[in-house]
Length: 138
Image 1 (tube, rainbow, N blue to C red):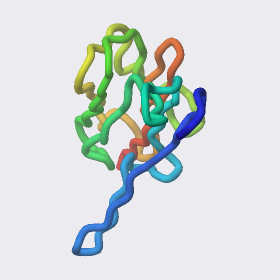
Image 2 (cartoon, rainbow, N blue to C red):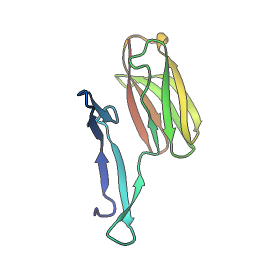
Image 3 (cartoon, rainbow, N blue to C red):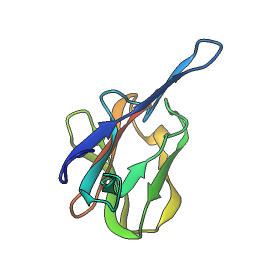
């Protein structure tokens, strides 16, 4: 059992029978899922947990991109936030969405033909939370 206040970081790695290895989230082990122990549960030494990631960027596709690109987002609850794209220096290149992000899955879009080839970052920023995913434009 973990003590209250402990944050658990993890990722999942699997190997197919054909030898292909996959990790989730995709940038694992540098990117990871996490949850926090909030208290002791009832009976058997179990603990209560709370999910720390209230919103996440799912796998962007196509990536690398050279056309309209889908930024799929999953949010546990409706939330106010901004989704934007930065260059490798952190300069904001495009505000993709600002305002309400509904609960569940929602797709947002970027026209990759408008940008030079290179590495970009898609960022979601809410009041207390920030998540980033890489986008390569070819």
